[in-house]
Image 1 (tube, helix red, strand yellow):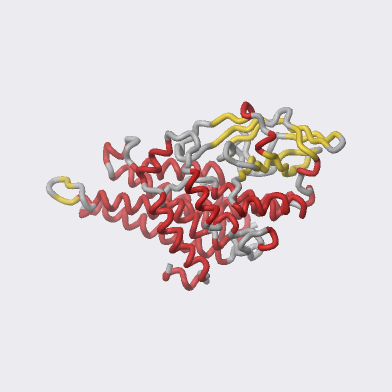
Image 2 (cartoon, one colour; image 1 turned 45 degrees about the vertical axis):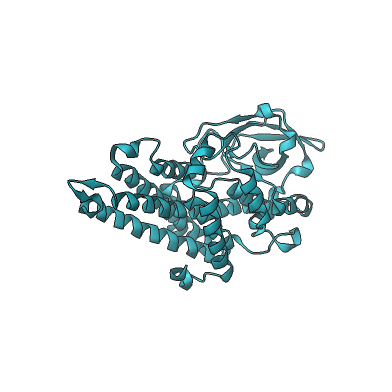
Length: 374
């Protein structure tokens, strides 16, 4: 972390980095990651319990709601180490759901759910639909109000960790305007959740069928705060996923270098060949760019305008760097690289799915261009 000091790295970030580095390395060895691919739950519930006990879910929740009272900047080093070790749990989804509540929930909604999340309850977001659009306003799911009851309709996709979540926050249209709805998992029939087959086998993603589901009008966010909620979700999501991708980039580069240092061709270590050595150095330079952008974005996350620019820069750089480093990792492993047994495959799949959730590098560059040049 020393090379990040000029970006205003906090003592809390440094302390959390130390703890998260050891925790994620010890609790998520690659053998366990692969074992969990075949597990229905997809993560170790004992580790999830430890994450709650460590207070990591409470970091960016205010003290008034029984949180730690820090910010998304202090979530970054944890997410980075989770990405580095492919530790997939509901951590990111739950953190983003808490941010949505903070941005758009009223006092009663926040009081009901934020302390639960801080104590370890999982939550998630249901935002995307089959149109594949990352614009949160382009949705078809609806809510029809009758008295104090809202009847929902439509389908949501990429609802990650929905089976484990106690709360799902879904975007719907009420009288043509986008609003957010709090849906308790206990109110959702198991048949309404269909597990999706996604390229990242370390995550659990679901399609949520909202047809016929009813909630109280008290479960709706204030429509006047929809824009604020969308902006918070997009920014917090861009930051936390950039952190995970940056950590993954470091890991796949390390994995590839280890192979380049041991594999021989023509009686020479293949890492000595310029055709492999130079691209690896390029990948490392891009990784350093990613990490610099990441902690710069964390540092100015709450600065209006500047924070938005920084997050899009970080997300764009992280997705591009991660994708390219994982591609080269697969290529440099030769025929083995194209098999499922090559760990570089796991990182490449992780990068693809992250792009599907928050937008790929090109999308974030287009958003950045609009901010800088419009």
